[in-house]
Length: 437
Image 1 (tube, rainbow, N blue to C red):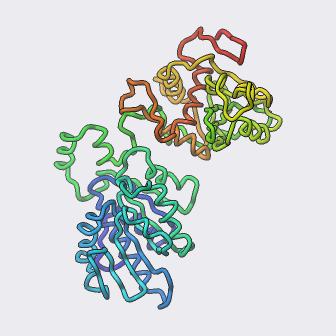
Image 2: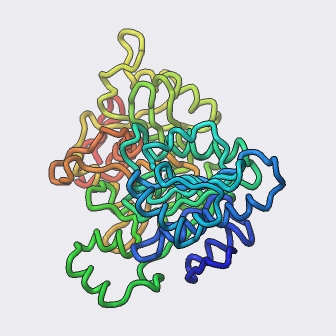
Image 3: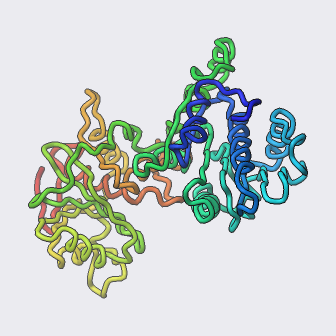
């Protein structure tokens, strides 16, 4: 570590994994106000430069990038921090505040980018990249996910596949892409996640915290000072909690076990979540997405689950609507032509009722949980977390469909309401047969 870097205990844990033990390729830090995010981000960038300066002359792609949300933050916060507090202006061979760059000879560079300009990183090689306050990245004509997947990660992996690293550090803002990144460690050992609230910061005292409690609403305080990912109340399935409902303790489908498939008809999407019905519990173990039509999805289900009985709980409107089917065919008749049983109501139940059914299965007033998800059903989990009400008003009973997050959760609503309806004595339809339940 360079001698002029001083870190508090929380920062030291992340630093140790990135630069001492080097047992982490991608570090994701969810931290509250007062953690010292900017200082720590700059410290990591300086340490990466220190490593590059020890490499032999002629080593290509010796670049470090620090991406701030805006240009003003890049030049007004990070450049002075790097130039004066860490002393880079005195040791660099050349520096420019105008474009936020420090040159250490002709081969080693540290540049502070604004998110709006980060697209120009495309095609460069980056040894280390800091993504600061990614939840505030806006205005670049792209999304943080697209920026990471199409620009930032390729800059690291294509030029520094073994030793290239990254730090993503931010205060949370609900279940967005930063939240996804914070959970990547579940499926990829190259990732590590860290969480620090105001109690982990040596820079905040009790007076500051009490003032914040007086001026902020509980949700905002939880986000800014407790670094909570909880959303602001528009979440439809508010009982869903990844820590409680996502687990590998539930088995994958066993030989001879009936396959239950939630289906939301939508050309080119065809969202399907597969669950096993075990006792009174729904165990989601598989998912499908992206089939062009109902027929294609049916063929995949039959091929994947050959020898299993398959029951589908489709969108009730599929009785009439067609998805690229021949004249006279409906989504229901296509399912049945493949030997898949269909169970659905004759018309959509009220949205508030089907949502209540799902939330009740997720957790009832007694604390019982009757719905679980294996971690590999990524799109289904994301849909449960991100489906929201429109206009920040759950009383409108209208689900926001602008971002396409609702497809898998819509299918789950259809199945759950059919199997576990709010009102007893309702009519449950199996194709043309009505059954009193």
